[in-house]
Length: 405
Image (cartoon, rainbow, N blue to C red; front, side):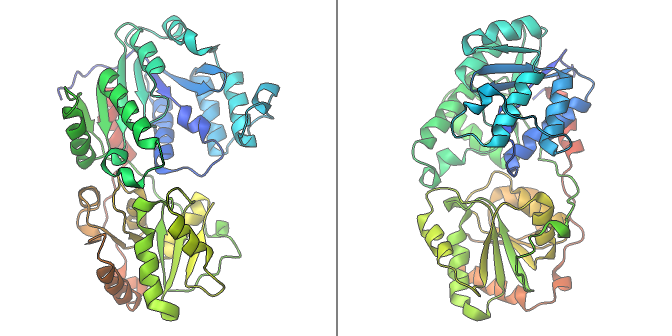
């Protein structure tokens, strides 16, 4: 698309996803929203924050956003939940504290129907709204932003996997995702994609609905991984060589293939660490994990800090990534940054991002996976290491993204 080369008078970042997931280990999408928060706070263009709470919407200025960022990163503590936050059903203590903090930090709040008035009264004409987390993309929010004179809406699209692989999704989630994407199609002035592959797949969907919105591609950035050995749980018994797979335990991640391989390899298999929380529609895999006994060559590990997880990735013989579908594949990028080789499924997204630095296999050919795993496990770890991977950076990402938003 043609570059307008004009900075907006202000930006409005939606931080609803970060609010909802406060206190949890960040997923890849969470990290993107957090990276945008840090980048916009460091940018010369004034930035505001918008979040949906159980009681309505809150608007934060740069001071409030900075403090929220520091709470999310652990630099500052969250406050004690207030009375209204304690009424939130099913929320964790940290989630209640986060809502308390945002209400306290807000420069304005409103009930849902008052959102257009709040935004118009506080934000200048030409404000650029950014939503990077697939959250809060409602007709109310997108419509309210559109009432600001000359406002522009930019939305980050991570993938359209729910539409391409509905069989891997929670019941009812495909319809919700499609409705969200149709709203984006209607209201967005610009779409930001994490890869050419995601762009191509999404635009195929949009083309069937009408005009295709303007778009840019900016590969996700990464920061230098910092493994912290001291944060690895002391009771985690690891034997070298070991392999690791990282990600939510859901059907599209294809843990089934790895469990089949390890069943065939038996007691002489190298160790496999399955790192990630349990997801959905995966009862067979959950049952197999529950049946793992003492001395099993497979271990399920969840709730790790970033430092602990990176330490385990760095020490692994290889990262295994047999996913049926991915939007980007951040764990593979981090593994290569740490020198850990990657064995992954033969997907266009992986080939675009990882190029020749990974080894690609069909995601249904478990015999090929077994052969490669056995071969690698018999080689010295040092002989497999990767030392020349050029990882995409956030500086490169924002040089593109902030030039258009």
